[in-house]
Image (tube, rainbow, N blue to C red; front, side, top):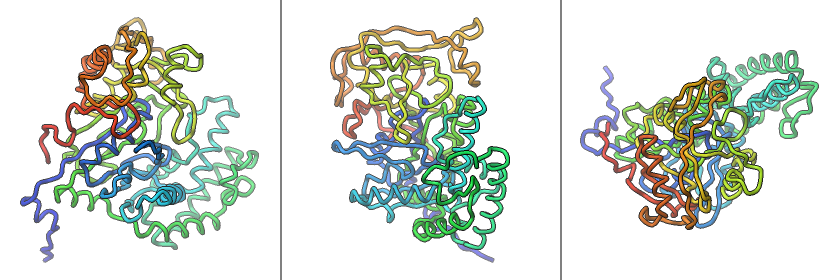
Length: 474
């Protein structure tokens, strides 16, 4: 009889368990999660990505130096922190190699501190190619494009759900990998050539080594995957085991969400959404820890709203005409997507939308970012509900068609002319800025824990500490 006991469990009773915080975006992404994850990591020993892929982008500004991350968790900028890519993330090893090389060139130690779940589905050239060809097919047919980044995220998740994904663990077994790859390419080429007529399209330069006459080629894709496997092997891990052991050692963990709640595949503005669950509950499923280990959920929200790509946006303003509030948000807020460089659509703060996010995430506290962008606006509007089909509602509907029919109901508040950039104490904010924040708390029903007053790590107002907030630990 095997009587071996997991040492983490055997010693758990004698040690303080760690406390864990989940950070999620509450709008359509781009809320400034990267800075907050980096800032909160001062109190953590591990940072975990649990969904999405390199379609996400987090920008950190530390001592005036800007760093953009896409797959590597934002905690990598702290030298004593271990970073984990959980099983819920779809991984392009090619893009991970590029990102790690850039960080290491800047003097950041990465590979010794990065752990990648063996259960992560892989993004391979066929996924990016199908993504691009499908969007082109929709456009040629007169349909509205979904607005994907063209990086293969959706097709990779489709393979995962269809149980035909190639996973990180398959890279360790070349013969198994080759057999699965041949089967997958057979299906992809049938769809690409016979249905989507990929042979009639120009192949993107980056994919030309893997495509001939619109068809994916086995040999170059397999060879490149095997080359990447050698690089990745030292970082492959059972992330679930490692996270649970860290928790039982008393280490605090930070779970870093990507994108935003309204892009969630189940709870977002479907079909104008991403292909993964962006809500806090997925931190458990996407990393291999139990939900009782998620102790505090911090929702990140801009002091206004932005959205990249297609889909309904009830409070959207004219953000292209100089002199308008939307143009002010766009230019002062430098609203360009980190991953794609696309301009973000801008609009007033939507408290009814945030109610939906608070509900599906179980938010413990809020972090308001980019408050400083509103400096100088005479009047501010807060959406507190909508008119839909002749009725007033106070929470964002679930369907994109209904959302598109919503007319915002606004409350007008006075703005402020004082500069809030770099303010680090709540009482030193302009009175009207404090009133604006307090009204957000009232309408959304969630206390504000943190306020960011610029992209810099140190320009942050702390009202309570998420890692020390009074919650019951598992």
